[in-house]
Length: 271
Length: 192
Image 1 (cartoon, chains in turn blue, yellow):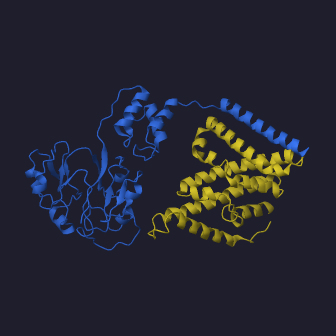
Image 2 (image 1 turned 90 degrees about the vertical axis):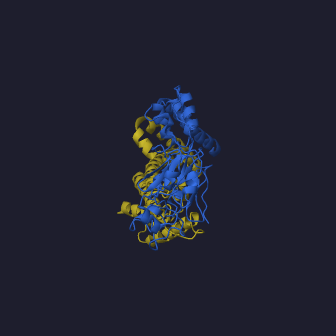
Image 3 (image 1 turned 135 degrees about the vertical axis):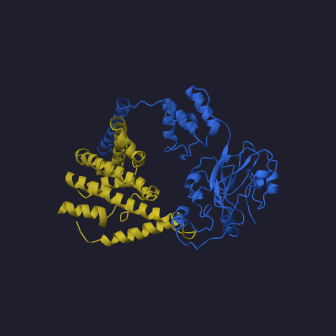
């Protein structure tokens, strides 16, 4: 008796709920654009938020609906944009060129001293709240690793010298670290180009930089004069090399009195 | 008074997570941020109440008349899983805003032991239907309370400078233990 009743009741419940679910699946079916799922699969799936949306699936919805451009995915780059275009049946519009994060600071503790001893919360944004950061230079990296924490791809690590280092293999150029950095030390730049760059972020005048840092750009314009291609300009006391014009000749490196002009893509490890 | 006592016991002195050790998985898994823990808590209150009512009715009209109380656990699992699935479909169609708000938490708690635990506790302690509803909602609130407190602690722990060997799981479990210890202070204040 017990056995048969058990079988009947549990079996009956199973059949009842199975039937109910089958009916509900039809009755309450929500029509979804099948392309959304395909596009979601094409996106990297890291949910990094570089496109400005909550995650890859919401980005896919917006892309299919045409609310944001097909090349909105920065980590995916041209490859992903092209395959999305193929799915949606539209012509490719994406521009090429892989971008990665670049740390624009060489100021380790030895060469860029602190102005006071900071013992607060180990977070750059928190440190900025105490009289604008503990470093004598108001533009350089604080080295507390807020960018390392922010990186969704584990491409950043804190080097032994107290500056973050970019693993260019893993970096997708999504720019999450650049947004997280309270001092805007991280720039997102074209990676696959042979050129020079100046890893300094200081817009202070030459005199102030000299006092605060041994490896900061003082805006002396020696590199501007040395460059045969007019690729270097000084804006706000900081020399900037135009990557389109730079031919990687190296004349500016020789001219720079502070020796801070580096090759693009080199991992910067100071002694 | 009796209902007030049930509420007090369910939320504080016999908290489902911190005293009965049910639902530890979402307690540790979804408490990284306060908003996700609130979302999870709301979904749990919703599903817990609904599941408790349905299983209570099922127990009274189907299992007890045939003397099949020993089938409670398996029958309740079946009913709760089917019910959550059904509600999810209906919500998706009729109330997309609520569906998005509950989001992934709905299917996540289908097989959560707090839901099954409360359904079983209700019939085992012989609650009537009003007590069942009150107890389920109060337990859900107790769960949410524990989740939000834990999420608040963990959000602060993120910014603390601590030894490497304590970081992550270790410090989370230590703070969960201390929190449970604090809730033990409510023990015996009200008895049912």
